[in-house]
Length: 171
Image (cartoon, rainbow, N blue to C red):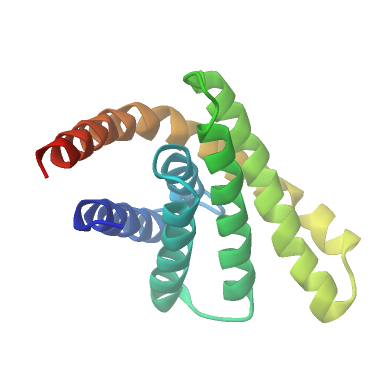
């Protein structure tokens, strides 16, 4: 991983941490999942996993650490891995497919976090059903953030791809 890619990851992590902190007044609405999806699509599975780890650790230093931190890393890393497989699709994936995928990821994240309650308290269904409205907020927030952020970030990452190609041909 070169310094240019590490710089992009640091910028995405800082954007995710600031976005998560800025949207704490809205339950489960934050740009972290969307940024991890975009990172997985455009930079690959390793970058998405690193972004998931960095964002979770840094934002939870501000918002509070707990046993859920481990499961947040697991769920966001899994979302990043799945989105990187979607990014390997030979043709460019339409934005509406990415938006639908981000909605699915909002519910997947909630399911994984609800499974942690089962592993600790032994009760899954009451916690999961009570959390469905919040998972819906998360899914809608993901769709909005993907719609807003994907065109901008993919434009800048195209510049990264062109610079990477240019730098490889110079050396």
